[in-house]
Image (tube, rainbow, N blue to C red; front, side, top):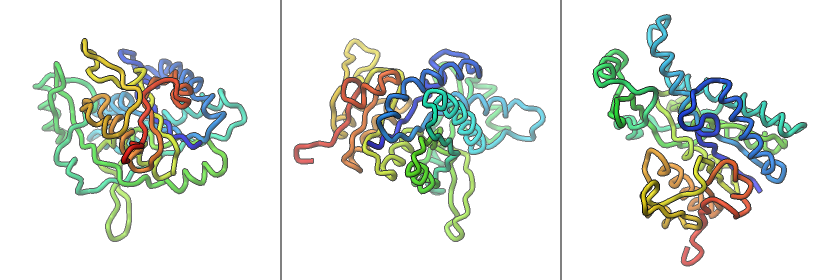
Length: 307
């Protein structure tokens, strides 16, 4: 079975942890252990988040006095793909001796006229006071928005249209390689309508929607979205919290999950199942093997009655 695994940001950094290199190195070994059994039995492609890492690089770039301006987000995204890809490749090499592994910096095509560019919503980087956020916004031409107790930069999150390296990923899979790709949703690029020339854009593509698109294009059988909760819950964090264990895309969408947490994951799972009639699941990293074999997590399946 061909499985696309989408690792959440908790794979490298758990909630509240400092973003130190040593912390991420230790956490990535847990990832390799959790995925090793799956890789032994199935053909696997691994994607991953990069939220904490790109946020850290963005803050450092903004504060660097040697620069005339911060690095653009598409280049920071490429840096995180390389760093996280290297951590995953080394940990998986150690957990799976002799296995061929490729970590690929991947580009995701988006539309230049995507409405998301006019309505930035994706938070990036640290929290600021309103006064400092407004000053930075004027200096760097940022958009800012209130996020709880402070203000943060917001950037566009356009929809993924195509993963540029899909054919290369397919060839690597055909050669027996375990492929790590599409990190952080991929480096966002637009293509010139006449020449096809690619250009990076100031945006962040949702990693789960990119994983769903990649899984569809690779004709995967299963999309596995791993996070830090055992399954999807309705009423999460309230007295009415209830687990969702077996669900169709339509039923899942009726849950109205928050955009900032479970919403993109449930939408990605629903899209993949609708477009392919395959299976998707959402659950905890340490239960990855159990989820694929139907013993844990939230299973998203086609509507078998009147589908």
